[in-house]
Length: 400
Image (cartoon, rainbow, N blue to C red; front, side):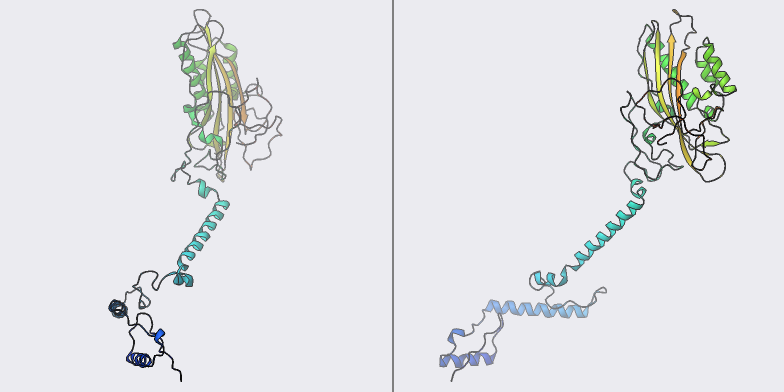
């Protein structure tokens, strides 16, 4: 009759009395010697008892003092290091759900933000580093123009277009200089038999003429800028008379806009107090005993209608090319310090055609149809080609 050896105890557990009795019986009969249980060492028994005590202590402590945010007390063995009861198998059963949920939430937020920016790009562009959070855009200004550009400038990256607070938004003028700051005279030096002081004087005269004729508030609201005429050679009767008549009685072929920028205050009002300016001033020797100063500038004017209604904003532009010549009074019969105006060409952009009342007439989308344009379409910000002599036909503009 065969007998079966007692099953070995669980690893680390102490054998019971019944198990020892069965072991002794089998040992005497010689059965199951190869499967005899081994008595655990004293260190193993001590470790086992210590682990049991710690488990019981953790359970007892959690029952007596439960933290307010705990939904249930920790289970026995929760104090053990990772890998004892909280190792890889716990992660496979769902221990990583918190991380997966966070990634999903982050993806939803990112997709929502991209959708909002696609619908309204200004949500992003308004907070770019070069924009003030409490005011208009503040892109870094362009360096002064020192030579004729080779291509037209690109628009400002603001797809929403201009506003009353940011009238130059969306146009290259946003980075142009403000008013007189954009009219810089080059360093003077003696040339053409004229001294450095004489050259500096005519350069300063050119700047003063441009500022008074195109930037002064009184000139812009339609007043007669007599101060400009006082800057010029009084002996140049034809020019003086032509400009005075044009200011007093504007007509076709006798338009004060040839030299002055003027708006009808009953029709439009300026938006803000800034006119954007870009261009350059150069000089060279003229005839012996003279110096020629050439200026090429574009002015950008933001305006709105003077009448009540929706605050619509438009921009008109004027480009001017002028030449002043200062002669040596010891060699020519001229007035000392008074240069002659030998060239003054101009071009208007976004102004009604066939209007000869001496004012720039900006066009708004809700205006009545204007007379058909007769000139070619042009980009008013493209300063890469010189103006032709004399004003060309009234054409369309590709942007303002």
